[in-house]
Image 1 (cartoon, helix red, strand yellow):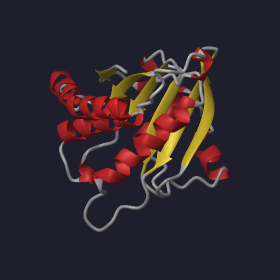
Image 2 (cartoon, rainbow, N blue to C red):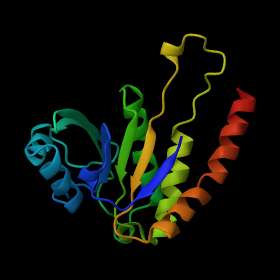
Image 3 (cartoon, rainbow, N blue to C red):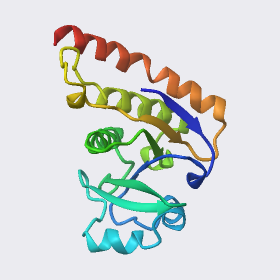
Image 4 (cartoon, helix red, strand yellow):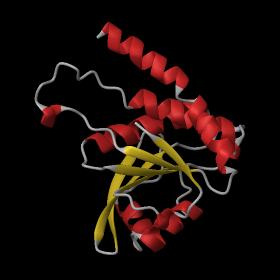
Length: 192
């Protein structure tokens, strides 16, 4: 898996899957509005029709279109914010659900619209690092002895949209976040 940090607008990427996480009952975020403008104008109405509110553990997949190509849009819920900040564990679990949802699709590139770090009580670099850790951990599969390539799980290339942060700082945090999950995944591999 390769994670690329980008500060481009969502619609400037040539991806076939887009994912984002949302807080409960906060479905009017700038990210949702940008995706709706670019790919699926009826996105808020479709989320409401599916009774998606952003409840913790919830995931829904919509299909949009831009320039004649279809784009899968995965929205994962974080639940409601407790009194202080949203625990990073909720965010990591939401990212795991996104990866599991993508495994059943044929996505070559996934754009993850990373939320603002403030609701999590951390800075953008910490959130970038935790994003990298969670994505790498969730994408592990032991398939060394599966000979039928159709049965092997294909993990998409990931493009992480960080917003308007300094690109070098964010990429450094993402790269730092690959060390631990790579070691954990190697241990998993040895155990399997």
